[in-house]
Structures are given as C-alpha cells and as structure tokens.
Amino acid sequence: MQVVTRPAPEQDIDALDRIHQGLTGQGFTHLEHVVDGGYSGPDSIYRAQQRWGITLFGPVRDDPRAGQRPGFAKEDVQIDWQARTLTCPHGVTSLPWKPTLGDGHLRLSVLFPRRACRECDDRIRCTGNVDGKGRHIFLLPQPQQEIQTGIRREQKTDQWRRRYAIRAGCEATASETVHARGLRRCRYRGLAKTHVQHVLTAAGANIIRLSDCFPPGTSTSCRPRSPGQFLQLCQRLAT
Ligand code: SF4
Image (spheres, rainbow, N blue to C red):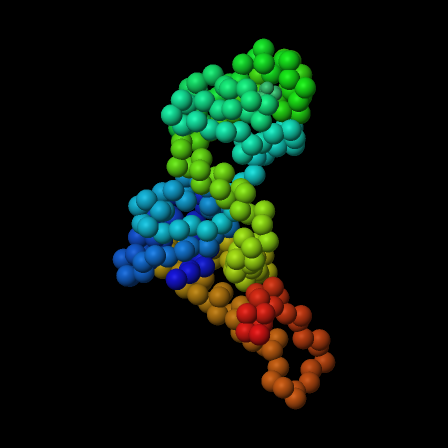
C-alpha cells in the first residue's frame, strides 16, 4: 500500500513519528510513505523502518561538496565495517575511523594517510584541497550509510524516477495552495480554527480546479488549463 502525504520537515522528526503513529494506529501496515527530499534523510528512513515498519520513499541529498571533489565520491570507496577502514579506488586504506558528532548525530570521521594522498595522481580531484592534506570522509553509522549509498545510486535511474513521479500531484497541489491560496498564512488563532482554514482552502482549490473542467460539448471563452503533471500521470496509467 502506498500513501502520499506532505509530512513535517526533516528537522522535526517527531512530526513524522506522529504521522506514522497515526497511520499504524488506524491499522495501516506495510506502508510505503512517499515524501520529498526535505524529509527523506537516511536517519528518518532508518527510524521510520525500525520504529513503525514504514518505508520512507524519497530522494536523499547528494553530497553538497561533490563539485569540489569531482574525482571520487563517498560511494566510490570500499567500506570495511569490521576493520573500521575505507579503501579508495587507488587501493589505499584509510586509518581506522573515529566517532564524532555532526549536527548532533553520530558520524565516523575517516582520514586517508596524508603521505599516500600527496603521491596520488588524483589528489586534487579527490581531496579538493591544495594544502597537501589527505582525503577526509564522514561516514554515517552502518545502517544509515547503507541506506544513503543505496538510494544515491538508485535515484539516478529512470526506474526510480518513474516510481517517484507519483509525488508530482502532491508537489503541484502543495505549491498551489501555499503560493496561490496563502495556506502558510494563518488567519485565525488556535489549531482547530487553523484546521478549518486548511480544509476550506483545500475545498476552494478543488472548486477552482473543477471550474477549469468543462463537460464535453461545452465551450468557453477561456482556454482550458493544460493538464498538470499529476493528470498526465493518471492518464498514462489509465492507458
Ligand atoms: S587522493 Fe588519497 S584517497 Fe584519494 S584516490 Fe588518491 S590515494 Fe586515494
């Protein structure tokens, strides 16, 4: 079973928990929850699976500094979880990693021997530095690292992109209600009234969309709206 919603931001992991708690409390099991990239970090994916048995399906962030190190990405090194070392594509093995904290989460800091990197033909492309330091890599704990590596590879494939296209309607609807209907500006005090505002905004958006549809044979002075990505996806699946 697949559920497509727009959950709370990644940093507010408790909100994702509340959604998943609500879904499992209603008897939904073996769910795949399709989210966008802001909500599908390796930690969230791991937590959703472990705690609720729910598969979070969404892209993970590419390495933001990949452009500075075009030679080899983290995914190109071999990880030896027993020996706590990495081996790079040139066959050089790192020093054993050291645990550290990154953004309050456990990370593994790995350094390759400075001397070996200095003598390497790919040093600049791999390390991205000009001051002769060895390559430095941060790993996630093993389960999260395996999630990140696997999804970074998968999300480059057409098959993965076709599957993820199911979110197209969600993105367009969220964008329309936020930017065109002012959903992020609360006009009332209190959660109950805010909820009513959200429901009315959604109902209004639906009415506007319906007004764009004309029964066969009717004509209008306005050009009908061209089908959005979600409608195109539905039409493709129906054929
Ligand atoms: S710079 Fe160091 S880590 Fe990178 S490929 Fe060369 S030897 Fe390996």
